[in-house]
Structures are given as structure tokens and as C-alpha cells.
Image (cartoon, rainbow, N blue to C red; front, side, top):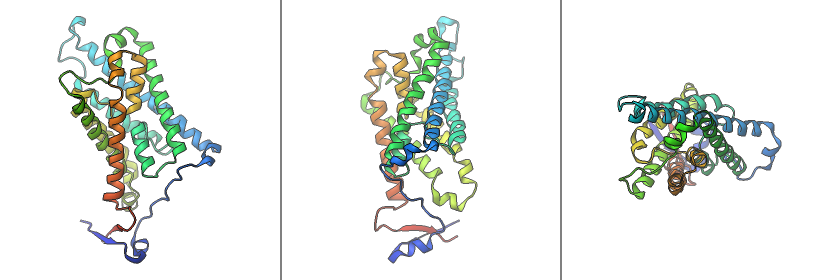
Length: 285
């Protein structure tokens, strides 16, 4: 197996590395606003988030409808929690694969925040991505409601809410840890060091990201319905519009943003030792 050797004395890390980190993105980059590639990326984030919410919210509502005793459903009917988790994880896998080369495949304001804190994207791009993601989520949920209005209202509109029996602290903690798992996976799957060593890593990156979403949903659906994506929670709350969804809305922003910030710090300044004076690492293999 490869062995990591610490380097970094008197500038030797530059010559010892067998990979090269991209330069940090500027915090403010007005030039982006003059490039079509920037607007193409924003559109890609909008469409991807729209499709993500459309498929996943339809899955949630369909499951609740199929298990509703009032509709002659049974507890064993429908896709179950496992199927819902697959829907969320599978759609992230598909959409990241489709959009990674255009926008980076964020589809989540928490992911965008984490990458901004790590200086992977500029502030302008981060703000525009978040706006596009939230708008896409609203439109995706709006499509679901337009197609299945009765079921949408009856079965909660796919909105995230803290389940009965759980404290606010538990719900917030679940969102923080769940988002940490996701954003940490994003950083690891897109690490330039790993991409340089293994040519297949960039191609496979959407797979572990989708699996991270899948696993987090299995763990936290019973607690909060699993947010870990502020756009997903916001879009569903806007279209559903009920008081309970808005009462808990802060949790689905604060939790994911804290989790994303911790993941960015952990990857950049602990695992990658990017802080000044901590050196870097290379493999002896």
C-alpha cells in the first residue's frame, strides 16, 4: 500500500509533489459575470435541482399514498424508507455525473458553501449557485403539486419536519452530522491529489457522493426526513406552505451549513494540511 511521507521543509513540497493543487478561487471575481460558461453553469444547477426535487418528492408522496390505510394501502406497500433513500442517492449520482463537467454538480447550497470556504469557487459563483438551486427546488416541487395536487397536500408535500419524539438538538445534530458526511465525501471524491494518482477517480466521483446521500437518508429519515440540502427543504416548504414546515426551517439551513463548514475545515486544514507551515504530503509509491 502507498505510504504518506511528510514533506514541506524549505519549499521542498513543491518539487516532491506528484500532483498540483489548482489555485484558490478569488473571493470576488467580476469577470465571471461576462462569461457564458458561468451562466451555463448556473442554468445547469437550476435544472439539476429541479429534476432532483421532482423525482424525490414524487417518490416520497407515492410511498405515503401507497401505505395509507384510507386508500387500502398496507404498511408493506410502496418503496419503503430504503426506496426513498435510493431515490435521493440515485438522483444525486445521476445529476452529479451529468453536471460535474459544467457546474461542478453541487445541487446543494451546503456543498456550495463548503467549496466556497475551501476557496474552490468564488463568492459570486456561490451566491448565484445557491439562488439557482433554491429556485430550481421551488419549481421542482411546484411541478409535483401541479401533477398531484390532492396527494401533495394530503401527504405533506415532501416537506422536512422534525419528527415527534425528537428534540430540537437531536434534529440539529442529525443535520450537522449528515451534511458533514456528504460534504466530506465531496471533498474526498474530488481531491486533486487522488485524481492525479488514479485516473479513474474523477469518473467514479459521483458514485460515492450518491452513496453518501443514500446512507445519510437511511439514518436520518426517521428523525427529520433528512434535509442535508437547504434548497431541498426550502423548496418543499415554499410550495407546501404549512406552519410546521416553516417552524423547523431554520434547522435545515443552520445544520447543513455548520456541517459543511466543519467538513471543509477538516479536509483542508487537517487531512490536507493546507494551513501555512503545516506542510504537505506525498506518496512514496
